[in-house]
Amino acid sequence: MDFYTAGKDYIICTLCPKACKIKTDGTGDCGIRMNKNNKLFLPYNGIPSALNIDPIEKKPLYHFQPGANIFSIGFYGCNFHCPFCQNHGISQKPFPSGTDSYLPPEELITLVKNRNLSLLAFTYSEPLVHFEYLLEAAELAQLADIKTVLVTNGYINKVPAGELLPYIDALNIDLKTFNDDFYRTEIGGSLGPVLDFIELSTAYSHVEVTTLIIPGKNDSISEIEEISSFIAAIDRSIPLHLSAYYPTYRYTIPSTPESTITGSLSAARKYLDYVYPGNTVSMDSNTYCPNCSSLLVKRTGYRTSIQGIENGKCLKCGMKIGIVV
Ligand code: SF4
Image (cartoon, rainbow, N blue to C red; front, top):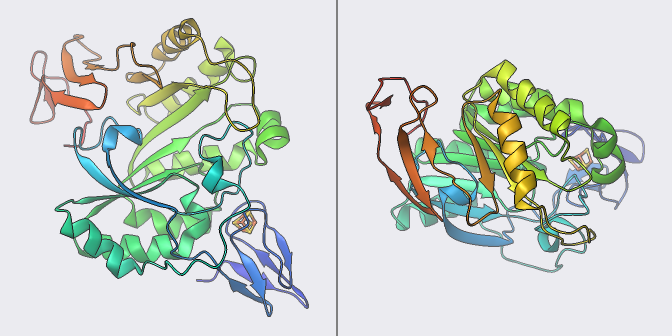
């Protein structure tokens, strides 16, 4: 299915809630989807900005194949414009021009297999604006027994989301704030569609959520509680990563103090079973049993060892632990 409609001298992209009206030779807000002769044209289709092998914990995913390495591909562009983007060099314009490095989805799958890996992540910038490539590559991955991971801002309409999600095994979704005004004024999006996408994704795939805690912007305890209770209403065992911000791109606000992360973790843990600090070196990011507090997964940096789980249950108390190994 094509996610656009054509008018007399424009197209309307229907992939994400922005519904950009794109005039001839123009691009939508993401800079990726273009109108050529009143048809959708994708000049950056399949052009990687980065290819790496990462620990899966770096996505971050803590409850999906802990300790595994994952082949990771990034592209260009994003339908958000966060002034604190840690990947603004590839997510925001200008993008490199005249590149001829198209990587066919079949070759991407071969690259993953040649490295003896069985995990593939679409990550770094916003993968969803490359919907067509993602769908093709994820379908091929499924046929090749490769599990797929999507690291995303979750800003996509429900129909394309429903087409893609059956081919995605796990997601980390950014929930940047619970404040619609912050989404609209500083990020260039809105809250409702992201919440809808989180809920929809849990019907198909393993989901973890990340919130970057920015001092003075989204670090109030009441906002952390709103985020946590929204997630808990879906499933209190969904992992939430509360990551420390550091100044980058257009933001010069000082880094998030450790005490703010500590307070946020405590607030979120009233609602959720698994809440983790991110972008902090010294804080405890182990997994403990929500029932008996036994150590289940030990993490030191990106080194991970499963210590207290057998057959999907806590070794000590027998509680079912939803970690996909
Ligand atoms: S995907 Fe890009 S072009 Fe399409 S509506 Fe969203 S921002 Fe606009």
